[in-house]
Structures are given as structure tokens and as C-alpha cells.
Amino acid sequence: MNEELRKVTFDLNEQNLFIGDISLDFKDKDGILKRRHGLFYRFGDKIVYDSEQEKSFQKTVAIVEEIATGKIYEVAPERVKFVKK
Image (cartoon, rainbow, N blue to C red; front, side):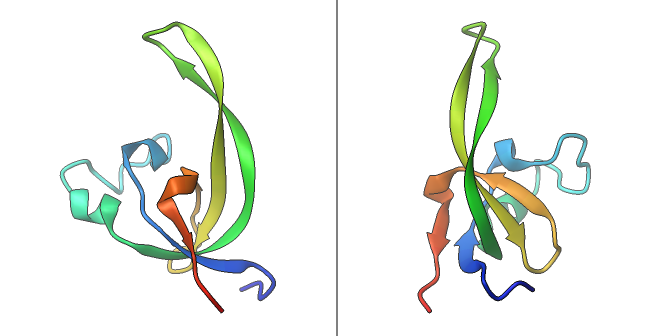
């Protein structure tokens, strides 16, 4: 674990799942919405396509590593809370 990274807690929603990730099914809402502990890497921008409006837009995401699994997630900034030292 990199000690220079800030610790955070975060939760997921359906949009945070990996493409093709079948280990987390949508029946398990508690698994998606549970609080997770992670390490914050940085904020980044992601291009998202809205099929209803047929246009793309830029979205800010937090790049977070879940401590328990080592998985990297792109999380909406409002779903991330920084842990005080």
C-alpha cells in the first residue's frame, strides 16, 4: 500500500461496475451500495456518451483503489469521502 495516497471511503452505483464484470449482479444492491475503503489516486475527466441525447459530454471522476480487492474504480466525486488522518 502506498502511504502517500489519501485514504477514502466510497460506495458504488450501477454505473461504476466494470464493463463485462459479472461477479457483481444487480440483485445484490447491498454489495453495490456498501461503504468501501480505498486509496484516492486523483480526479480525472471521462468522456460519456448519452444515447438519448445522442451526444457526448465530459464528466469528472475520482480514481480510487479498493483496499480489500485492489480493484480500480472510477467513482462520482460526490460518492467519495476523505478520511481524516
